[in-house]
Length: 454
Figure 1 (cartoon, rainbow, N blue to C red):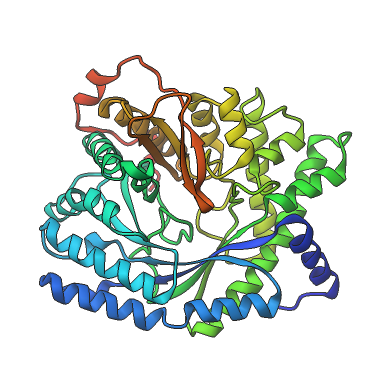
Figure 2 (figure 1 turned 90 degrees about the vertical axis):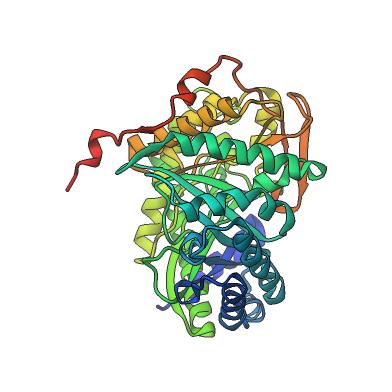
């Protein structure tokens, strides 16, 4: 692939002025050959494979970043779901392997590693149950290992028993990390219709349909998109706004393609995908919420927010698809509350509620992301919130997810503080109307009729 001098100069300007960066280079590693019923042997095999495959990841990422002058913010690893690797229904076995993974991640210099994952959208095995039973301990005692659980899909419906089980796991995990405002829950994502090549944490896992090892790149650039809309002015109509977003996404994707292929060559692995998701940070100007404001909304959560977000998401995908044939992952716009300065301000002002966020997730990537709620919220209410988001994913045949922090000892008006990329978040109100009877029925909500597409 060749890049013109004009494209290179445009990209340099986007880096310097608009905070354009590669949000993450994630190395996917298959662990299918590491399965062993002896936990110690399994842990040893997993650790050795991570150290072998990712030995040069940190240094080579720094080299590529320096060579192209394009900041690469995070180096990460995604692994085969551990429920497919530890063939023994013993929580202690999962704890032992998880700690080996966490130590290996520290040795190779990545900030997060994903794959403590169970897929229970239709039911649980004894191994899944053991993995989930160990989850609070793993999330409380490891620093880098991230967890995910698949609770629903368009083909299977929603595992309501799983929703209630995971709500209890979230509350226990939050309590186990009380001294850090429940940060353990920031490393746990619950999915409907997940993808196997997601480079973003905390929900990344390397699906069994993937090759031995590949590079998955997550590009970002909310600042670049916002600047393009500012340059467009306030008199442009929404068709022109969409066109400007498409052009920005094209340029951002081209930069990501350049880095991804260079990283794959450096590591001698396959170039997997580019995820086009606009991923914000707490830094000023690096905000999806501010893009919505530049479109004309007073702040995120105003009437029209869902429509504006739909247009943004669609235009980003159109621009990216034109720029690369390797688009994958989630690809869209993230709207986390804790990681986006504009979204945080809107939540504090009461412009954004959980209900409005839920509506917005029907048209964007992922779902209810990094939201703090009162620690006293019942497991049944939390399970019902999870089920609502799973339903949006199932009905729309899209990926949705939940990453909620029931903040121990905190209530509406308080805030949680995580620091770094995770930032902080105000504790948001949750409806006090009970859904207990509905949730306690259990069972599985059947798949929607659109699942019958074969």
